[in-house]
Length: 439
Image 1 (cartoon, rainbow, N blue to C red):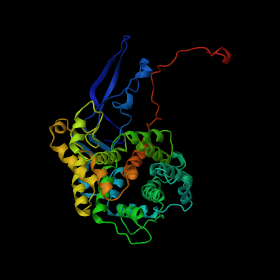
Image 2: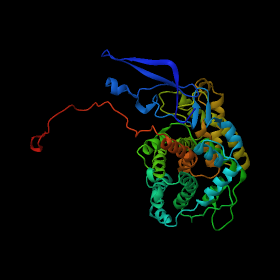
Image 3: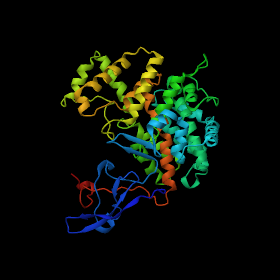
Image 4: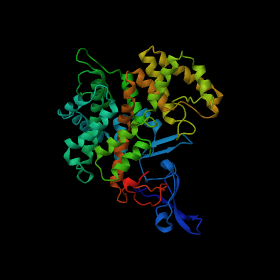
């Protein structure tokens, strides 16, 4: 399939009949994985009607070649490659290249990309002044979004999409610098000195070094932790047209630059209904522990529809059977916990909850299996990532997807500025009332 080109179903159109007697034939398309779509782009111009789809759950906003997922079958692929294969064999840097450029890099391309990331890891020294201006209680996502947006001011050639300059350089600059920004945000929040990046380390090891090293003692990232972080970032690298990705595309459609578009995506991800799910898992486990640690009590509450309690980290809005990412990450979770030998009552509760849910008919019948948020929250806690950094970690992983989606939109000559319609339900025309006559 050529870029942004759907295949039209042979000799088939959908016919829509409207109450006022109008009818319209609408083209029916199919994607490369046989997903069907009705093209309604001419509906308003020809009939005066629009569709209503709150949340756009049934609306295709674009054609994309990046990610395919099938929620019913539990399939997730980046550029056609199953997530299971990428998780088992690839590095995050390889996956980032795949998503942004559409193919896996050969060794020469990977070496050049890695060198480019190393070259751009440092921040402009003046940016450190920004960190000192934030409150000590500032959420790391607030800092991260602001700092990413501020990169536009340091790299003037990228200040607008039309002046974006070298997209390759901007992509590498952002993929590299976001881990430095994230680590500096954390250091700011705990009052420790910043740790500069080390080009001799891998992408993930370098981030862990900046997060956890201190001048007073040596720090060497544990290979098991490095591998787990690499896996987590891969699993989060893209996920089709979710809230934050749709936000990036919406902002980009105005021809905003890459940094501004990604900063908007970070803010969308910050919402607790999107990127905050793994944080909610740990907070739920903390509440269970504070209540006495009775797992059965909370499982019974979850079964009672009148209780208002929901177990976080189980089931998924898109995956109606199982989350393929959770299948992969479960093994890594066990490996990390066994290797680190952590004694943590919250993590013990997580394992108990997992065992109950996987064997309880209520959860099995409803396909409420642990999802990627459940296991990622456990791993992040185990390796020492604080809860308020969980969504930042999500942003690190999702960044290649945002960049790939931004680039795909900009490369599409048919793209238009996003402008949804609405159905107005407010007051009809009334006259202005002078202030002395108002009730």
